[in-house]
Length: 264
Image 1 (cartoon, rainbow, N blue to C red):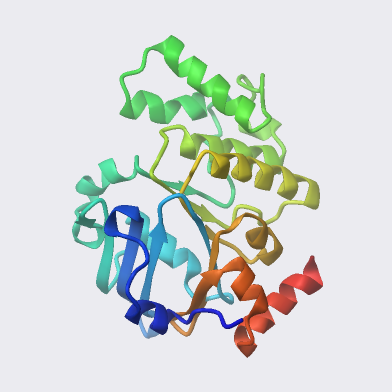
Image 2: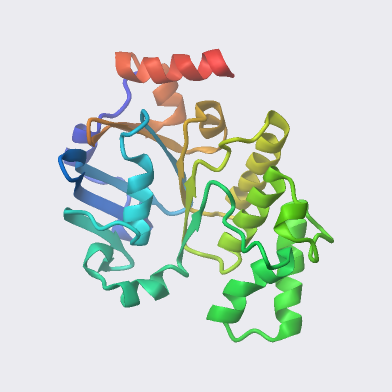
């Protein structure tokens, strides 16, 4: 079976109405000095799906996420979310959108001097009017979801690397964002902690989360993704279901898949 190329997908009528598209990138270009990173990145993220983004080192996978959240500004192109082009917003205007688009950093990005509960409570105190008892209840629910019940009073340096990443995930999703951006979430984890983190993401997927999963861990991406996109030479080379990607006869796609199978 042939995987769907990005160009053919772009030219074909969308099978999803605009109401079913959570986020869309249109012809994104980005360069850092003379280094060209993106030369027309385009794709749609559908509501309720996890889309994994593959590509070699230096192909700009994380730059895609950073551009969506406003940490980088594309040189041209559009990033459409809830009827707005995020590339046109000021830093101040982006603040409200960052409560709707969560970024899960590689290392968890917890505040070192705050306990786990204080870390998870922080977004709720900043962006909601929940009472202390309601915040505590929500924090407890999140900790139970990520298998960290009763870890409320621990500081980050008392947590394993895997627990830090799971706590970072919980803090990112506690405001119930519309889209979650995962930046190499399994990087540096041993197989046991990778499995635990993926189980947490699967539970969120059962609740209908929408996300982009940037990773070098292709077996992990195959396990949780609905579709796969491969970034090559500044563009989306192919985007299709996991099944079609695995069955693709495209040599470049096969090189990714064979690498995944050899490492699984």
